[in-house]
Picture 1 (cartoon, rainbow, N blue to C red):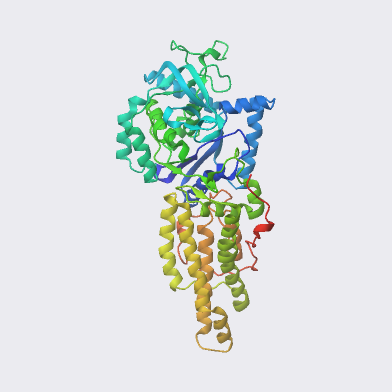
Picture 2 (spheres, rainbow, N blue to C red):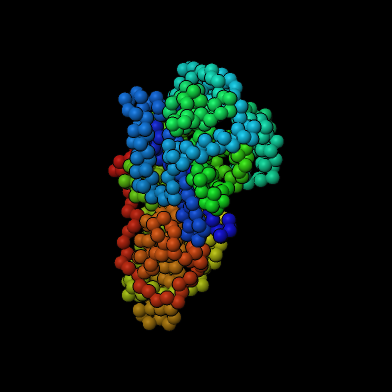
Length: 545
């Protein structure tokens, strides 16, 4: 296969230091939608997500709880897996930085950087955030509680003086500037690209890639004199330290593609087509990571999409502040499809957004219970009532023209990672179909047809055929967002859903999304059943924290 029919998408890997909030998994839901879209289009797709398990604060918290660090992260990883299962996340691999192949990959990247002359031993003195890593003076803020990391203001910083290995990021400044200029789509959206390019032009400093004295982490494979730190018995000399958590974490993307043990798979899947990451880690992914790859003789990823944060009353949602939504609770109330839909409809995928439980319920009721749910229920009910359950063929009325405009725009927005806008455009078509019901008034046509008025039965069949076709197309198009709802929608319309639970299998989706793709097939609708029952906000259980 050529690279044109394969698609490799990743998310950032999350710290396994606590149970996840919906804000933590927001990007994972978005990436899952994009992965499903490509699977259903017929692209061979690889979707990678997982957990970062080597941060200092994880080891500290485990010690405070009297647990081994491995037991502690295993418990938290299980919580992440359970939450992702509830949200119907379908990765081809859930990677952990404690996985043996990742440890091997990280050490190989270190060795390649050393062989290329890009790492050296030096001294570091400065602030260290246990939740993020070393911080430059420009990356900290002064608060009433002292110096803090702006991304983790409740975590006390540590002042460290260490003898570490450093990566020569400064050596890649010119190449990074050139890469940004020659590949304008590399870092997106554009205003984030400009931020990163401005940072590069401000001058790049070498960064530490090891920790001295740390025992929880990947053993650094090289001693200060350049010899291997692996002893004859296979153990690692602790004097070499460990691989710095950010250097370790970024490498998961190539591990997940087969580096270095499966060169055939790696040649197939690398470079990644899309990294989906948050704005707080943009520098690591768009500046540090390409340089690390080039140092190892590897290509940079094709595109990095940088999303914003979920806010609660203007503050970033976080577990430490207690203003977050539990994803399992949200799914329990809205269902997996409802939780996925409202999260990606309410939060633009390119910037921050203030959300609340009430806003989620309002969106669910407006878009799913009232708007599309009502359209589907009315269309199926009228086909049963007026046509004895027969599913008539669609005509070529106004809805066909609207769909021919809506579909390309929907696909373009989705491929451009503008997920909220993609849904907004699709729901404009839902609105058009609902207006068509009110305009055409099938109940009046049925009455006139029953009275023997000439041509009214054919007109009724054409109107209902168009409405049922509109519902089929909406149900299929929204399947990446609502993977369990789509088969139920199709079943009510009398169609088989051809795709597997993860979106693989079945015909090419764009063929199925042609107006009248099944025009020659006879069929019958099922009994109308509400798929999205209305929810009263005051009776719903989830609440922040």
